[in-house]
Image (tube, rainbow, N blue to C red; front, side, top):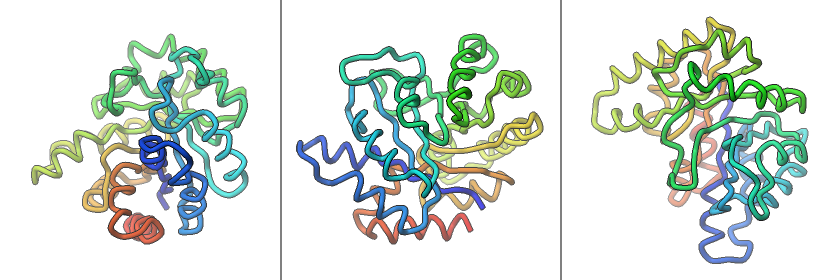
Length: 247
């Protein structure tokens, strides 16, 4: 079964907008776990606009031995203030998985993946460093990605498909072209020995169609839509609804 990893960033955004500790990210994490999710995702950024390093540490103690812990981030973003850098955070908390994303401060959200044909030389030593910590390494890529055999040889174990273009096409009413492209990319990655994750703008409306098109989909990381839907349906109910779709 495809693992549902709930991204908790939007919980932190709401908390940070007011200050203080509410809504509490640890309580949200426990609620998602109790509802049956298989993992939790956070994406700490140097500007600390949502999940902060202290959140990453608190969740590490909370999740250990219960569900998978996935930390996303730009491995090339330097330490700044309280943010120690992605590798240093991983050294502290030893997540199950790190997902490497080429984002920057100017991006509202992640909107593109790495180009493995050109970025692999600089990624390779970083991948090795994360692997030495015992972390599974996934790399965020687009539907046009290539270079999977070389990525596997460099120690990358998974890719995460950036599904924003699919979600946009689905909302327009016809996602056939995008689905075919993602299915082809997933198949090529799997043939090279990589497992396939997916994330970005997946929702209850479009997830089932996407999963049906991608045999062997290992994990979906969903935050924005899930937390938005939870405002109306409740967090536990929403997590269970996603699990029903994935099953």
